[in-house]
Length: 337
Ligand SMILES: *Cc1c(COP(=O)(O)O)cnc(C)c1O
Image (cartoon, rainbow, N blue to C red; front, side, top):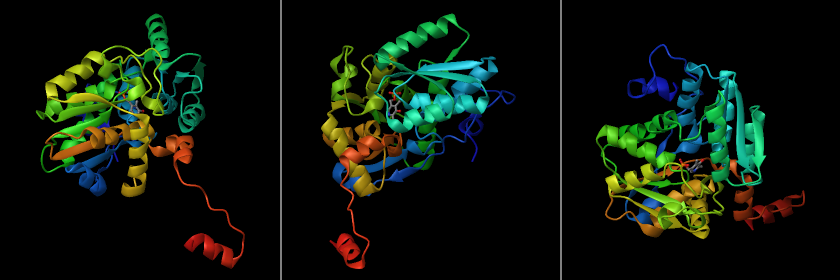
């Protein structure tokens, strides 16, 4: 499988001779979701972005951001992260042989993401503050040092991430009517809209924020964002204007879903569709089920990250393990009971 720069080079800002740092990202499955379709009264598809190399869509942006950084001669990259950007940046930096530092909110990132960033050899800095503060600090740092900033304020991130729209359009026989997507820093909704816009398609962009971290819904930054969906625990999105533009231009909406609704969708996906995503990803499905998609016939939900990223939340939501004595009768009772 080729990476997305090679696959879509004619639509990305890379020339044939440019260095490419890739882990074979993109080309993720678009899976029909029969149980969701029935509940939503529409044809629902799930874009499984958790099947990217590091387990989230961030890899699409990262292959472009890190390739561009290498092209410019950067020796190091830096980002603020709720977890997945850190895991992705760390992996692509390792691949490129350059240094990586990530700043994460202390104690607020999922276990799998922390393990990834550390394993890939990044310097992981736990900030006693939230994501918004971390981003403000790395922006200052990158402005005064020769370090490439790989958050989604970096245009190459958006360019890479727009390719998911191309893949969705290629996979479907007819055009999409609506796209449901979780919104945190709002880079991804910006990217999807750009991708569809470049294709001349106009699906309604339905963005969903967690109720405790819903600045775009409230129309004002949230000082202390709080939600179980740690990947979208963001109070002041860097791509605020772009997200509002995607919403308005596509005739879409940005709405809130509660943690309870997010977790219900999270369990439903796992138990009825066989799809294990992380809580933030389930916000797209929660939004579809709670708010609907108007008269849309064909809907895609972006499942942004893999469920294995956050085993702690999963174990807290799932049923209990059945313990068993090692004899046949006990096993029989345990299995059939
Ligand atoms: C980063 C992330 C988001 C939010 O994407 P933005 O571009 O910040 O809006 C949603 N879900 C997951 C799993 C993420 O890692």
